[in-house]
Length: 341
Ligand SMILES: [Zn+2]
Image (cartoon, rainbow, N blue to C red; front, side):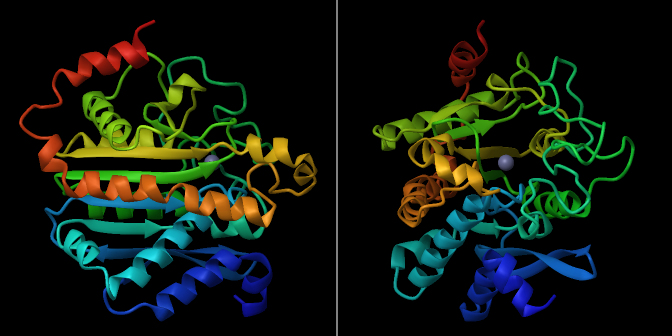
């Protein structure tokens, strides 16, 4: 791929590769796959820091699944840059990293981002592409459709293997996290509503809570106690719309075969507020999903740092709040809050 192309269309990939070049040996890098598009090969990178032990708890930050939602990738790159910069002097960060592994897959869909598309290069929505179906009434089109790759939310052909990007991310999570006693994902998206939301599975059912609903409720409780003035709404994705083929539904169900806890969360940054303040940004193709004004981009880049730091600490300290059946009566509270209607 030419450097000029990356400069013009994928500054996020350039920034990511620059971070990889600059950083010292503490940052481990893997290329999960290359996606071939118009004779260009686009890399999907995973970066890791901290404990390499198989039984260390793990947190994985994911971004750029939907190509139009550039801000998710940018939030993660800003955070990664800050973490790398602090390694040289921050004793408590280095101590933390002895007990936890941090992974970053900041740009899952580089072709979509380069082409200003939600989907990947084949027109497939990577969050509708997993082999999992909802038995309930899903949202029309938005819930995933097999009519045409020209319409958004295309699931891909029935029975075909998952797309390269979805397979690469799944294999990475499977190999790295499923054997950890406790692991968490924060997958960063934007474009839904006025508020910043933290979503958890299922996306396929309004009625069926996940097996670890108590653990999710407990984590929410910790966040609300530690940061009472945060403004996140914390809820099951299905509260808003149901969909087929959600990758986190799929991986969560697979994780249940292991005797471990895997909690995939999605951060949905509410972009309608950016549009409300600056309706002209709708004229740009990324405008509905990305704050266009520079001061607003900066504000978003700093506003999720507290959440990311909190999650790392909650993962590293999981034995203090998760074990010994402490979560048990949380199941009931969770069901009351989210599923009692
Ligand atoms: Zn998205």
